[in-house]
Length: 213
Image (cartoon, rainbow, N blue to C red; front, side, top):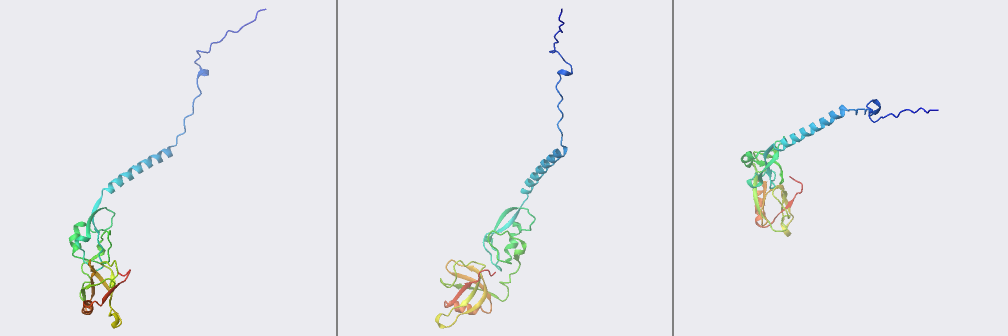
């Protein structure tokens, strides 16, 4: 009895469908996210460009380096030139400094302030008609420490034991402060003779009015 044998089949050289890999499905594309990423990149580049261009757009301005009291004239020592970014604010240009030096402060201006046109006036009410500038030689105890130009003070008559004191000027503007106790104040012209009379005999003192400008 003969056993039937099937010949072995060689599959090493198959090139048909059985030897091929299964196809990989293509990745799903998200065009909306790609477009958003592109917009963000372009927007960032545009913002950076504008920032660089803007930072180079600078103007010359005037900065106050010494306190100037209301009604006082601007001085060359109180001004300095600075370069600032052009923010659209109407700062006074350094090229206008000569005009500034011929004007007066409309308000008390502190050091570090960038000057604007509304901070100055052509004529000072403090130094106008009816006003007088008087100098006072004061001793320690007759004036507060730290008094500065632009402060407001009361000018007081202090007779000592001879009588009661009284206020001669309610709100005088300090026009200048010397190194050795000398103080210059602006008072009404009608009281200036009395102030000078008492000042000559050492019967004048000044009291600071904090917050008064």
